[in-house]
Length: 133
Image (cartoon, rainbow, N blue to C red):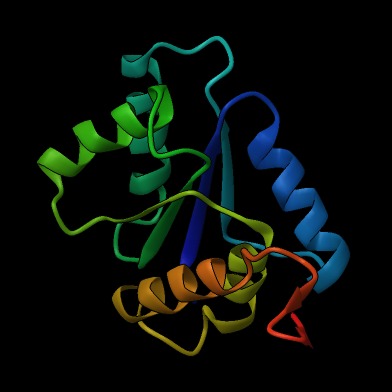
């Protein structure tokens, strides 16, 4: 099973996890990291501890935004470990898909599926060319 690390500003990561649990049930092998009160170097240390907790497991890291301290911290790690699977711009459909598929795919393959799921679930609600979305 692929481990997940959800990193975000404030309570974002915990709120996403709590909401996903309401839909798909309790999930294990997921670490939640907040940037609250952390410098970039502090975040790097926390993320490294999470990565090293089970060094042989596959991991996907989810970030809330493609910028800011969370992303900068992961980018610094990516320089040392270029094979990390890091996705910026987490949304709820992506996280639910991760939980549903993480025991069926390799992390590298699952990343593209998750990004497509996220994109496919962003749209303007309403009629499009006379049909419902």
